[in-house]
Length: 401
Image 1 (cartoon, rainbow, N blue to C red):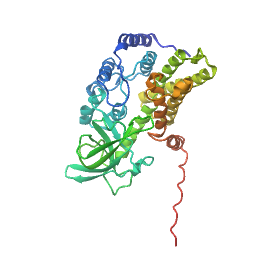
Image 2: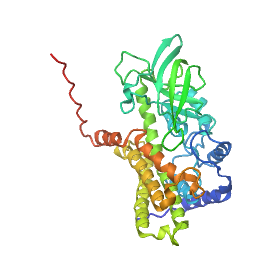
Image 3: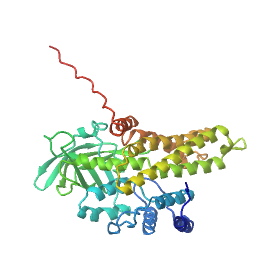
Image 4: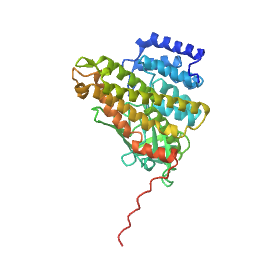
């Protein structure tokens, strides 16, 4: 079997490498989550113009408009990872809402929202989980009552990332109170500046307010701002969740993190010995490197299925579980390898990478829970992927006679 790239693909790699080498100094100074900075937006626009971001999104919606090509996608990821360059913006709007609109939105919704979202001009948050409806999301109680051409929304959401800085929310609300719980939900979009919305930050163990809780009091939203059909929000929500799990388990993110760990272990020393030369840490690194490679090739499997219009089945279901656990274990290796420096936090002058590894270690532990806990992901894999029976529910206790 010849696994070498053809001459055409090698030429494409050379063109990507030329771009990377020419523009490495233009990369954003502050890559990360939250509201994109001006240099992040400029970088995103540069990537879109050259086909390295939003590559297959139609040009009429602000994308590059290229044809799907699995190997070109892999080459782009490899070259950007090699140069430690960010591959562009990845957030709830770009990675989750845009593909949902492309699949289920109206033409008007696509033209109104996709381009500004891709450019980082419109930032989105997701209104899914509630205090009593996390694992059992379909039991959500945030409700919408009708008032002419509008819905009036009352209720609460929690664990809402970027709500404090977002422009818009895509939100699940119960619009059909008498329908079965999976059939009475609608998927609404609305501005976070709408009167009646209150956002309260939630500080996590990272020391930052990574999430928020959001309260709705008589929030008026036009009925026209539904994605999909009224009462079919559960179907739309699952389309979004599919993309969320892919974003959280992105193998390119793991590859970038792996490269940073290798560089750190080559530069840092303990008692005059490079960390990379310590046999215990090197063995752990090689084991994790093998898993990163496996996730990257698995990503190519998913791309192949997408290009062919096939349902990847269980292959897609394992991504979130494996990706989040892998990212957490990569951060754990960095913490352990740094030894006493790895336990520093805050403003210590000896902190490495501005505390990135410490924060990533704790935040990634949260992501093993967020977006569907590891236990829920295993249930999904077993029931939807392997066809195993659902776990039996405990019998309800009978009242006293």
